[in-house]
Length: 119
Length: 109
Image (cartoon, rainbow over all chains, first blue to last red; front, side, top):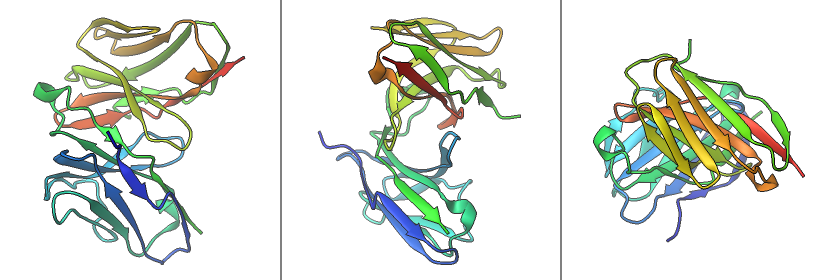
């Protein structure tokens, strides 16, 4: 079974530029997550999709970040304009269904991440 | 105060040693706890999850939760160089994972 695919793996941009990341989840997984992981910290959820609908985007800085999952399969995360503090690894994860107390075994599978450096 | 606290390490031990990795949490409503392993330049992968208090064993790994002290532990027996990674604890709150910062573990051959 193919895992979660992400591209690019690395990106270096200057502040105020824009950047986009792409994620292809595991086939059949309805739930897709985007996380930001700053060096030395745990992942922080940015946005969660159930099929093509947004379930939770409460921690997404909406003035500069946007994400979409138009056909309920792959997804893109965009930053425009980028700031120095956006330097981080952006992880995409997917699960069969939304993981919750009654669906504990709906494990989230993570992609390798995109390492963003903003200069 | 963060909801899940974890010492970032690094923790360096010789091969074959028993490793103890720990987290504390502040929200007494948390009931489900996970341990993830993250190799360099990779995404996290789930090792184990436990519910409420007690122990759960899987091969060389044992996860332990003490709800009275809000303490989560992961023990690794007969540690191997391939166990060198960052270990993240997390708690499932409603439908969101609350993560610790991760502890970097180094197993010296």
